[in-house]
Length: 314
Image (cartoon, rainbow, N blue to C red; front, side, top):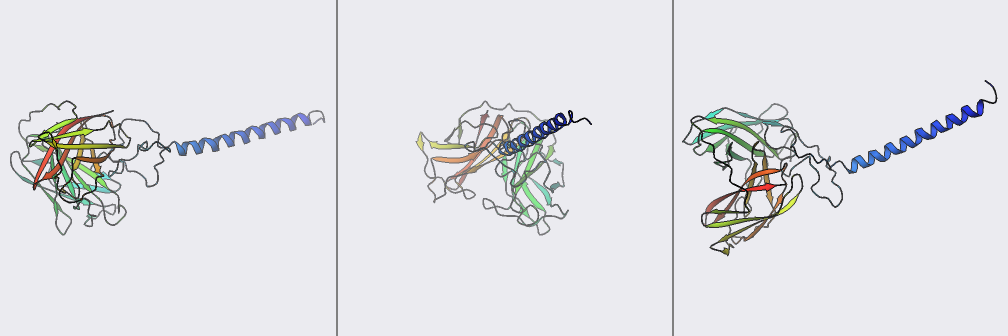
């Protein structure tokens, strides 16, 4: 190699080294940005029903609460539309239920080890909450099943009308791999007979039930945490005699029109005796946009009331 070509070769090598160093530094910077922006996925389609959130994987941007799209409070990233999640599986005995009469719906929960789970944490006074809703979002039932010693649960379904129903189970394992993780699993059943579908009522901020007027205040957006207020009045006067129901003054459950995705809105109002109301605050986070059918349950004078309304989520 001639001495005149050596400096040129050295210069080219130095330039290449500098370019590689610049690229490496740029990659490191991009990696850090990806970490900070991991909660900024703006897809409006919910995650697959069997998906589960990984603890510690949420990274919302400072000043932008609720921008993490991987989970919904109490659901660990699940829309409740699968019978299995994080190794836990819902197994049922029946795929059909008779129409027009009370029926016992039996089911079991098996864990990642394949064994029936019998140790559940208590949430809002119950180890297991079950819900039933028909495909047109009618016939809502909130049930509290009982468990036998072998882990078999039985939910006493009130009479169902013909059609397709989805039955949900909401629970938190108290031991094992899923200890402390809230899960929602579901399966469908068919009620024989001629089904007549009801049209979903238009979106409205108010609903009437048993002489009470329920008003929802707030403009929730999909995959963003919002504070939502529910006010209850009777004969135009604010209600202040709400009684505790499941350790809260109101229980709020929502189902998405079309696919029946599930959302449980968590109460934030502190319970203090039999004089709750008129305003109740909820932590609201809906996994997708569209129409949601809300069912608000509250109790006065020992009577449970259930108000239903349609809420538009942007």
